[in-house]
Image (cartoon, rainbow, N blue to C red; front, top):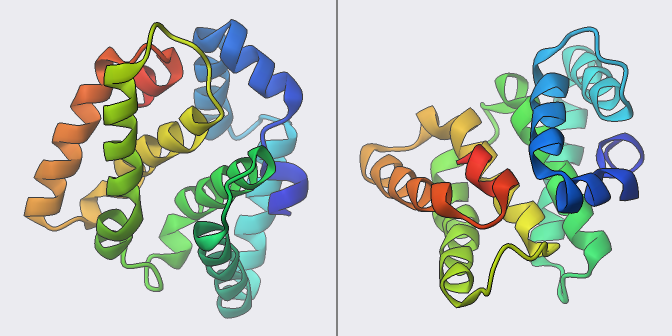
Length: 178
Protein backbone atom coordinates (compact mmCIF):
# COMPACT_ATOMS: atom_id res chain seq x y z
CA UNK A 1 0.00 0.00 0.00
CA UNK A 2 2.74 2.44 0.96
CA UNK A 3 4.93 1.87 -2.09
CA UNK A 4 1.98 1.84 -4.48
CA UNK A 5 -0.36 4.54 -3.19
CA UNK A 6 1.46 6.81 -0.73
CA UNK A 7 4.65 7.61 -2.65
CA UNK A 8 4.75 11.05 -4.23
CA UNK A 9 4.37 10.79 -8.00
CA UNK A 10 6.56 12.52 -10.61
CA UNK A 11 3.63 14.91 -11.12
CA UNK A 12 3.61 15.70 -7.37
CA UNK A 13 7.36 16.36 -7.43
CA UNK A 14 7.04 18.61 -10.45
CA UNK A 15 4.29 20.58 -8.76
CA UNK A 16 6.39 20.87 -5.57
CA UNK A 17 9.29 22.31 -7.62
CA UNK A 18 7.25 24.55 -9.93
CA UNK A 19 4.19 25.54 -7.89
CA UNK A 20 4.95 24.79 -4.24
CA UNK A 21 1.99 26.75 -2.86
CA UNK A 22 -0.46 24.73 -4.95
CA UNK A 23 1.29 21.51 -3.91
CA UNK A 24 1.08 22.44 -0.22
CA UNK A 25 -2.60 23.34 -0.60
CA UNK A 26 -3.28 20.03 -2.35
CA UNK A 27 -1.51 18.09 0.42
CA UNK A 28 -3.56 19.91 3.06
CA UNK A 29 -6.77 19.18 1.14
CA UNK A 30 -5.88 15.49 0.82
CA UNK A 31 -5.19 15.26 4.54
CA UNK A 32 -8.37 17.06 5.57
CA UNK A 33 -10.96 16.10 2.97
CA UNK A 34 -12.77 12.80 3.54
CA UNK A 35 -14.07 12.95 -0.02
CA UNK A 36 -10.71 13.15 -1.76
CA UNK A 37 -10.14 10.37 -4.24
CA UNK A 38 -6.43 10.77 -4.88
CA UNK A 39 -4.27 7.64 -4.68
CA UNK A 40 -2.58 8.94 -1.53
CA UNK A 41 -5.87 9.55 0.27
CA UNK A 42 -7.26 6.17 -0.83
CA UNK A 43 -4.07 4.44 0.32
CA UNK A 44 -4.24 6.13 3.73
CA UNK A 45 -7.92 5.18 4.09
CA UNK A 46 -7.14 1.57 3.17
CA UNK A 47 -4.25 1.44 5.62
CA UNK A 48 -6.46 2.81 8.40
CA UNK A 49 -9.13 0.19 7.66
CA UNK A 50 -6.51 -2.55 7.81
CA UNK A 51 -5.25 -1.19 11.13
CA UNK A 52 -8.76 -1.39 12.54
CA UNK A 53 -9.01 -5.05 11.53
CA UNK A 54 -5.48 -6.34 12.14
CA UNK A 55 -3.73 -3.77 14.27
CA UNK A 56 -0.68 -5.84 15.32
CA UNK A 57 0.33 -7.21 11.90
CA UNK A 58 -0.13 -3.96 10.01
CA UNK A 59 1.58 -1.88 12.70
CA UNK A 60 4.57 -4.22 12.80
CA UNK A 61 4.86 -4.17 9.00
CA UNK A 62 4.60 -0.39 8.82
CA UNK A 63 7.12 0.23 11.58
CA UNK A 64 9.43 -2.47 10.18
CA UNK A 65 9.40 -0.79 6.79
CA UNK A 66 10.15 2.61 8.31
CA UNK A 67 12.98 1.15 10.39
CA UNK A 68 14.50 -0.56 7.37
CA UNK A 69 14.33 2.67 5.35
CA UNK A 70 16.00 4.64 8.16
CA UNK A 71 19.11 2.53 7.94
CA UNK A 72 19.39 2.26 4.15
CA UNK A 73 22.45 3.87 2.65
CA UNK A 74 23.00 5.53 0.27
CA UNK A 75 19.71 7.43 0.25
CA UNK A 76 18.60 7.29 -3.35
CA UNK A 77 15.66 9.31 -4.63
CA UNK A 78 13.55 6.14 -4.52
CA UNK A 79 14.52 5.49 -0.89
CA UNK A 80 13.74 9.09 0.06
CA UNK A 81 10.31 8.84 -1.56
CA UNK A 82 9.58 5.51 0.16
CA UNK A 83 10.77 6.88 3.49
CA UNK A 84 8.55 9.95 3.09
CA UNK A 85 5.58 7.71 2.27
CA UNK A 86 6.24 5.47 5.29
CA UNK A 87 6.51 8.52 7.53
CA UNK A 88 3.28 9.89 6.06
CA UNK A 89 1.59 6.57 6.83
CA UNK A 90 2.84 6.65 10.42
CA UNK A 91 1.60 10.21 10.90
CA UNK A 92 -1.73 9.63 9.21
CA UNK A 93 -2.32 6.47 11.25
CA UNK A 94 -0.74 7.69 14.47
CA UNK A 95 -3.91 7.35 16.53
CA UNK A 96 -3.95 3.63 15.67
CA UNK A 97 -0.26 2.98 16.31
CA UNK A 98 0.80 5.44 19.01
CA UNK A 99 1.04 2.58 21.51
CA UNK A 100 3.91 1.13 19.44
CA UNK A 101 5.74 4.35 18.54
CA UNK A 102 7.84 6.23 21.04
CA UNK A 103 7.72 9.54 19.21
CA UNK A 104 10.04 11.21 21.71
CA UNK A 105 12.77 8.65 20.93
CA UNK A 106 12.07 8.82 17.19
CA UNK A 107 12.44 12.58 17.29
CA UNK A 108 15.68 12.45 19.28
CA UNK A 109 17.22 9.60 17.25
CA UNK A 110 16.25 10.64 13.74
CA UNK A 111 13.88 13.53 13.09
CA UNK A 112 15.99 16.05 15.02
CA UNK A 113 19.04 15.07 12.94
CA UNK A 114 17.09 15.47 9.71
CA UNK A 115 16.01 18.96 10.70
CA UNK A 116 19.41 20.02 12.02
CA UNK A 117 21.04 18.84 8.80
CA UNK A 118 18.62 20.97 6.81
CA UNK A 119 19.33 23.96 9.00
CA UNK A 120 23.03 23.74 8.08
CA UNK A 121 22.33 23.17 4.38
CA UNK A 122 19.87 26.03 4.35
CA UNK A 123 22.57 28.41 5.55
CA UNK A 124 24.77 27.33 2.64
CA UNK A 125 22.04 27.35 -0.02
CA UNK A 126 21.90 29.89 -2.81
CA UNK A 127 18.17 30.41 -3.27
CA UNK A 128 15.19 28.10 -3.25
CA UNK A 129 16.45 25.26 -5.44
CA UNK A 130 14.31 22.11 -5.10
CA UNK A 131 16.13 19.14 -3.62
CA UNK A 132 14.86 15.63 -3.03
CA UNK A 133 16.26 15.90 0.50
CA UNK A 134 13.67 18.63 1.14
CA UNK A 135 10.94 16.01 0.84
CA UNK A 136 11.92 14.09 3.97
CA UNK A 137 12.65 17.30 5.83
CA UNK A 138 9.18 18.67 5.08
CA UNK A 139 7.69 15.37 6.26
CA UNK A 140 9.71 15.57 9.50
CA UNK A 141 8.26 19.03 10.12
CA UNK A 142 4.77 17.70 9.42
CA UNK A 143 5.31 14.82 11.84
CA UNK A 144 6.24 17.24 14.60
CA UNK A 145 2.94 19.00 13.99
CA UNK A 146 0.96 15.76 13.94
CA UNK A 147 2.69 13.83 16.73
CA UNK A 148 4.43 16.58 18.70
CA UNK A 149 2.14 16.25 21.70
CA UNK A 150 3.99 13.01 22.45
CA UNK A 151 7.26 14.88 22.97
CA UNK A 152 8.56 15.57 26.45
CA UNK A 153 8.88 19.26 27.33
CA UNK A 154 12.59 19.65 26.53
CA UNK A 155 12.24 17.82 23.21
CA UNK A 156 9.12 19.84 22.35
CA UNK A 157 10.94 23.10 23.02
CA UNK A 158 13.82 22.01 20.81
CA UNK A 159 11.52 20.74 18.03
CA UNK A 160 9.53 23.96 18.11
CA UNK A 161 12.72 26.02 17.86
CA UNK A 162 13.90 23.96 14.87
CA UNK A 163 10.51 24.19 13.17
CA UNK A 164 10.31 27.96 13.57
CA UNK A 165 13.64 28.30 11.75
CA UNK A 166 12.05 26.66 8.71
CA UNK A 167 9.48 29.41 8.34
CA UNK A 168 12.21 31.27 6.43
CA UNK A 169 13.11 28.27 4.27
CA UNK A 170 13.56 29.04 0.57
CA UNK A 171 11.55 25.82 -0.01
CA UNK A 172 7.98 27.10 0.33
CA UNK A 173 6.58 23.64 1.12
CA UNK A 174 8.96 23.33 4.05
CA UNK A 175 8.09 26.82 5.25
CA UNK A 176 4.38 26.02 5.13
CA UNK A 177 4.89 22.72 6.99
CA UNK A 178 6.76 24.61 9.70
